[in-house]
Length: 615
Image: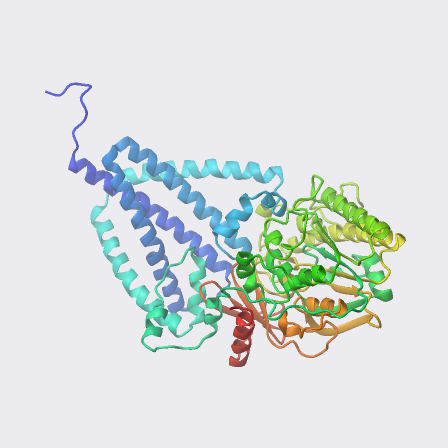
């Protein structure tokens, strides 16, 4: 006879009922994932066709069905360790999965990519606190959302206990297995024939693992050339520059590079930045159609200093190969000073662009973005002052400022452009409020106006100490900043390659006989060529860059762009945007879809540029 305290015997009947409850609980999460996928598909703004919609439905059941079938099996196995343990584990893990789905969907709606390890590492790093800032209100809303998700999980667990339909679940399981097999065959066909209208839909789910069979088909001699192959190009080991840099013995100018994070090209004008714009009008060379090599800091800075596509970033990072510009500065005997108001460790500029700079300062002084910008400028001015007093060699100084990127300016600074937005609340950004882009853009313009003020003051002080004599000065940005001009719920950068995210100001002072306004297309890859020529480098440009001299008006042809995840090709004002899966979109500089596809010649040129500096 059993006693009150004796352990309860294991019952297969109870275990079967509990497994059905766990399967229903997993099925509820499968439905939630379907809602998340639908929201991601909506933001992609795809045309509706029955076959593509069926592909999306089968994608949902194949991808998330596999995921939650695996989750359900784990929950069922853990039931052997006791019901109480199984319930607690299932509730907590289900809650975390729910939060992950919601957070991932929010990230995709904002930036058009899913959560990934590089982004997580960046967000959790010390640099993440500088790159992404949230007001207190957002933390409160986030905490309430987490609690609400816990409440929803408890309700779903209760509902799964009340619902009992084992035969229906078995039918769903059989349908899911058949769907998985049929979908994988369809996916192989889609990717082999490069059907972009289908391929782009795979971007709506995170960590897509669909079968493509590319390697198997290639092994049997079935090869099809298509533009998705551009995503598969890996740089491998870096061979850069192609030949050692050689310099003539002529006198070399000083160089001052001012890079303002996220500064838009259309904000460098007499209305928003009147002081620096006036300086450009008086004796500068201003390039109206200048484009960064990417839509994020990593590839923007990489292309600006290396002169080669950002697709070589990982190769440069692994080998600690410095940029051509900094190699030249060191080889030519420049006194180097790098002053950044944001951390140089993420992205890893200290291990790439500036890795050969001795005593490199990795972190700035000051608290908030405005304070850091001001202290960074002061530190650079101190460097120049000491140089003017003690050094006989030329200087090479880089000033990298961050306040515009953070949308910060001093509270007491007058607002030139009316807006009710004082700080960026990313949780309130949406695609439905038609007034929101203008209000956000005016906040950005006010920050740019303050940046104009401190830059002009900086230039005045540099001039007064005599450090502008025999000096080349460059003012530009790593990338642009969108305020949803494309009406795709795109804010900030790193989500597309439109003019709003890759077009930057480019002003250069101090090149003898070169000033005025230039309307031909230029890119960041042109800057190293221009600088190294002025510094006396005798190598052909192709040794260290895919660009040309900034003042060379000839056609740039094919320009390779990149972000943290995707790649792009700029040709004649049109963009081929290639996702991780190999799917692509073809649009103009305003983000509007254009018919046609990238010509074969441009694909070959892109491949050549992405392989030229690989061993």
